[in-house]
Length: 104
Image (cartoon, rainbow, N blue to C red):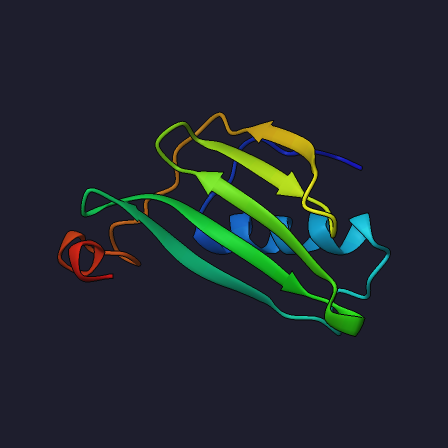
C-alpha cells in the first residue's frame, strides 16, 4: 500500500484515512462510513479521531495528532498497526474555527 505523506486539503486526508482503514480489513470503501470527531485539549483543537463503522460492530480507528502532524492507525482490537507522519500541514481553521474549538 502506498503511503502518501503530503495532502492538498482535509478532504484528501479524510479519503486516504478511510481507504487505509478499509484496506486493513478488506472492506469495500463505499459500503462503510467513517466518522470524524474533533479532539480538544485546553480549548484548542489538537487532533481528529476517525472511526470506521464496519460490519458486525467492527470498529477501526485513526487518530490524527494535528499538533505533531502524525496519523496513528488502530485495528479492530485497538492495536496500533501504523504510524504515518505528514510532511505538510493541512489548514483546519476553516473547518474547525477557534471559537467552535472551545465549545466542542
